[in-house]
Image 1 (spheres, rainbow, N blue to C red):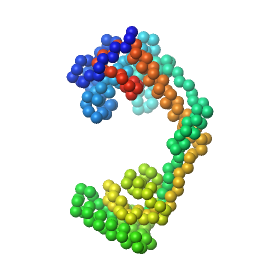
Image 2: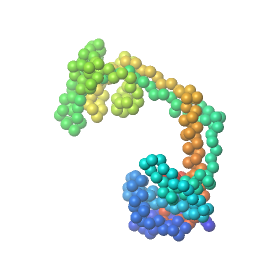
Image 3: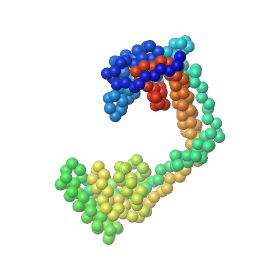
Image 4: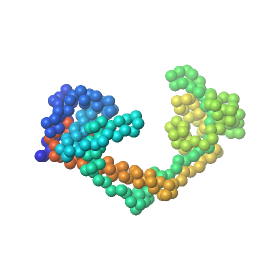
Length: 275
């Protein structure tokens, strides 16, 4: 049977069917919560596609007489239908296990992915400010700017000013934050650290959601590429998952190609994922 996929529809249009089997509208409405989208129509379409894929797999499992034993991971228990779909995919979709050579090629071509993060030994002075308080925010900026001006001429006073004026608990250590890396601080703070040279103090206050920071970078410790042996297992798992996702997508595409689907289009790989 050739694929007869009709145009994508909106919720108010005609129903969705897979080989004549209707996907109930209340099921689509319930599935929408699992598919955040930019608008209700897009969420409805994503939910409908997910249920079409589910119906394709269930129909094929019934056709082949595949029945799975429900599994449980403690908090979540498979339904009989979920077990049947899993058993069908396990039986019908075979994927090769990536060998050492494939893992090594991936490592050599993607070494930046296996580089440890840069570390920064830094200190700061925080002048707390709330952007919702325009007057207080302006005053805090003036105070922070005045501290920056002092430190241009007397950088040795950084710890003194931090103890006296910083709103961060690190004030007790003269503003010293120890070692931080990307993600440990706000994006604005992190960007400022990357701009500074070792021993440099930020020339202007750095604004974040906490207020204004005067930042001193004491030392930058460059990240390093992790050895292949350390990440080989991680790479193998990633490649196996990627190959399996592709194989399952191709399998579902074959099922869709033999089916008559009305009411929603399975037009891309995203629409063919198992949900």
